[in-house]
Length: 204
Image (cartoon, rainbow, N blue to C red):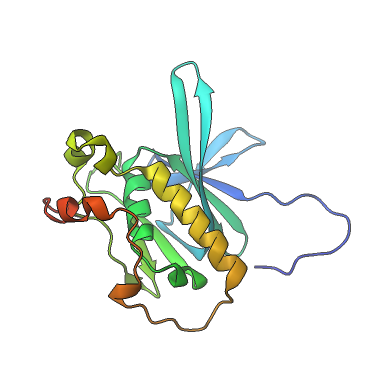
């Protein structure tokens, strides 16, 4: 990222990226001048994850919740997706499996789809060019049929990630290399660990 300039200037806001199929792309930018969507040809983004939070908006059709991922790279990007989408659920599950120290290094979030129409979009997480465990075994039916207290909650996951990132950034400095062991991984959902691992894998 560029060094912050001192003195008067124009407020710099994150570049918003919306996860949604548009033509042959998985996501797009929104041009506020022309009020048109601009497809993004790249399928991944690399940078430092600085925050993860949920917003809620009342509409004529009910309540709409969005997942926001703030990523610091050549500039600040804000990746936005519906909270209840496959992308949000799979990327949150992947993020929550990692040790918090992982996020002192750049991560790569990749979008993919097993559907030729690209309507169903999944999220993959890479650290140091290595694909990290994502819940490819996650079963949509589990979310519907499991007891309420055992269901995976994207909102709970996002809030947990946000608190973890704040604590990490406040108390630690980045290090060039970080070795992660299985014992260091954070499991935010121990009560559904066994159930999820027993489900059929989804091809990514």
